[in-house]
Length: 85
Image 1 (cartoon, rainbow, N blue to C red):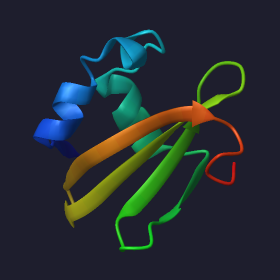
Image 2: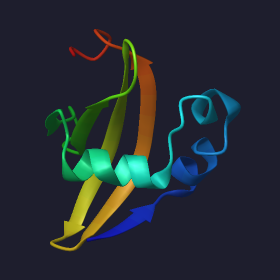
Image 3: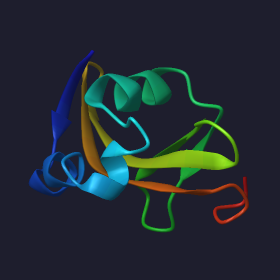
Image 4: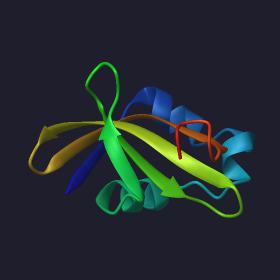
């Protein structure tokens, strides 16, 4: 499975507020492969949710381009409950 990152997602991985949660490309890809929860956004993109430590989750918005290519559009780190988790 090949992962493609938007410029926005690449830049977000460098932000200090994201780095402190140890969010890496490997972690994002792992959550997409085996999410704790998944679904679709209001606009049709895929959503994968994985649990981080404590009361935090990571919510990844992605698009399946082909069987072996997935584009990671963006991701959010938040407390559980914000996105129905």
